[in-house]
Image (tube, rainbow, N blue to C red; front, side):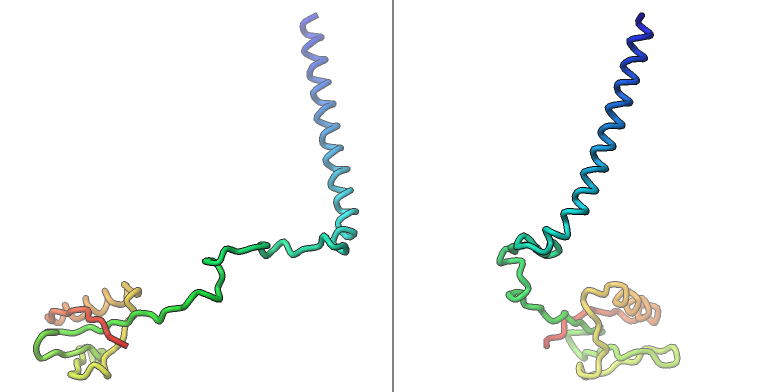
Length: 132
């Protein structure tokens, strides 16, 4: 008798599962039929954009700051020389900051590469902020 109860419970559970799947299918089909009508009424709204953004999130009030630029220099306190680049495997330095190579402060990889190259040559290099 116990086996009969277990079999009845399994059949009843399977029937409930099939009914729920059929109900979900009917609901989806109904939504597909109703959606064009809803889209043409006053309820239509663009769901891709939020209805209201807080004031701090609006782009109109955000000011984009220019990137911070730095230069590489050796002996920055006296007799300063700024890095220009490399010519025939030798580092080129200049006395004027206008001719110096500008690097972004956020580009750590480029800074590290230039510092490593200068240290191989035997120069002690400093990263100096360039005022705009």
